[in-house]
Image (cartoon, rainbow, N blue to C red; front, side, top):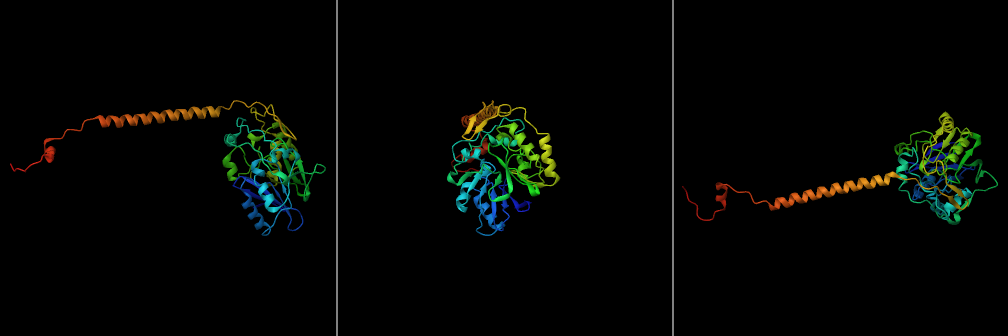
Length: 332
């Protein structure tokens, strides 16, 4: 557990996913922001008991968005604690199993290690049933957190929100950006600090991603916690985010770069055609080559064994052969 700012603590689950315990201002009351991957509920409950008191529970769960690494344990925790889950209205189709998020784009430029593993991610959709509800549309105030406001920052997810506390400029950015190099799995696992683009293969609208980063940079945060990466403070936070906004590394190619997906209150309204992905073909050719080499090696071994069986036994010399002659021994 690491402190981001007063009353805000970051818990890292499975070394690369962050969630946050945010105190309401009333002693003993708090809100959970994001829930990590599926199966994380026991670790989260144990951390909450240690941070506050045994048997504690939040007033509510707030999801910055509904991707698997942010909402994976939401249902289990909501049922355990008997608390509501809040998310932006545009996330509800994906959190109630009415829609599936746009598929990842493993071909995006500079996708890094994450682009490679994104090929194996299952379609993302969850059924939180009646426990999830929309954030109030008539106010940007975060439920149970009167000092906080939510900001709509789409591009990575249609209803992604970031939470901001103006009095001390604390920002919880979700996956609007990352505080580590998200294109490098080692950087993410080692929690090396660096303000960077988050989740490139999962960004379905790059123009919105850039605008969201610019919007949050305009808040001038001095303490930042995101979905991935360590908490950062001071000039590293403020200047790092402004640098990303000023020199946003827009990719030059990828499925959603020039032709973004379109999403609405019902889910996905339009998907661009997926570009050709050369990696599966290369893998297939490589596996075929390995299979042919393995088959040739096995055939060679079998041929050698067959030849050995067909060869006659080696002749023995006279002295050696006398060992096998039956009868009496004679001394010359």
